[in-house]
Every structure is written in structure tokens, then in C-alpha cells.
Image 1 (spheres, one colour):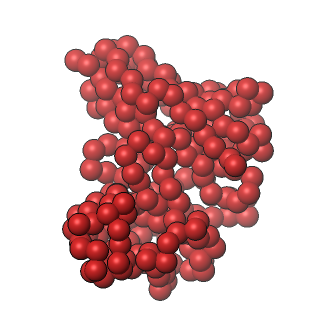
Image 2: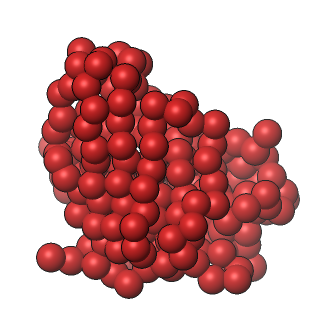
Length: 112
Length: 115
């Protein structure tokens, strides 16, 4: 079936450094790839998304890149800050319906 | 109130109890979802309501029963649950179009513990 693999499961970076989280999807027909951030005690919140007709999208310190040939997409966070500490989820919309296929999440820890 | 609101935030129930989770969205969206979130696992889609009609039920046990009385409210009725049902239950809403939806808004979830 359709699936999304996300790596790493835990990522620890020094404050001010960059963080990269990678996801691979199985369905070549997937056309929409959102990233969500989940802080402790809260539900996931959409932070950035990309559609299959573009290769990169940027919003201040965060960016997402998409490689359709390789079927993977990545989240890049530059100049990390303590408030970036959270669990990040990637997702892909599959062909069978309009619902999202989710990665297992990455716990990002920003060390002071 | 804005966004998606879930109540209660925490719930402890015995295996023979009956309880209900409530979700309300104030965004004017036309689709609502129930997800189950367990530690270190992908979000599991349980139910989808689109225009108040249930359009998806991902092989969820019958001890979970959804109800969507209108486009703003969603309930999840629980009865005779098992300890493995303990998890965070998330409600979400989105605006569906013919080409799909482009972003969910999640509530903060109900942390359910079955004892």
C-alpha cells in the first residue's frame, strides 16, 4: 500500500545550526506534500507545504524541497531557535482518495 | 472561540464505560476527521465526514462510533474499549474541493487512557 517513510526519528542540533528532515513516498501519483509541527500538548499545525509542480518553496527560516524522480522531499530549518523544538510530521496525498499518508514523525531537539 | 476545539482534554475510562469525545470547528470547513495518534507511529485516520456524510471508515472497530450532526460538530462515541485504545485522539477539519484539500486544522486532542 501507500506509505511515507520519515528520517530521522530524533534529531538534536545546536541552536543556530540547520536541521534537515527527509521523507520518502511510495505513490508516484502523489501531488501534495505538507509539513506539520506538533508542540507538546497541542495538535499538529501546518507550517509549509509544496505541490508537485514546484521543486522548492521557502518561508523565512523554513524551506521544503521536492525531488519527484526520487520520490522524496525534505524540510530545512535554518538558524534554529529553542522554539523550533517539537515533533515534525511529513505527509503526502495519495491517489486513492483525498486523504493524507503520514510519516511517523521526527522529534527535533534544539540544544542551547 | 476560533479554530478546532476538542473536549475533554483528558479522559480516563474503564473498559465497561461509555463516553463521548466532542469536536467543534469554527472555520466554516466542510470536512471533519478523527485521527488516532500513538507514540512513534504515523497518524491513523479513523473516520472522515465530508458535507456531514461519512466517506471513510478505515476498518475501525465497532467500539468506536462517530456522529456528525452538522458541519461544525463531530463526536466519537466510545464503549467497551480495550487498554490498547489508549492514545491521543485528534480531530481535524479542512475545506474540501474537487481537487482535494490543502491543509488540515487540528484540535489539541483528547488524551484517552483505558484502565
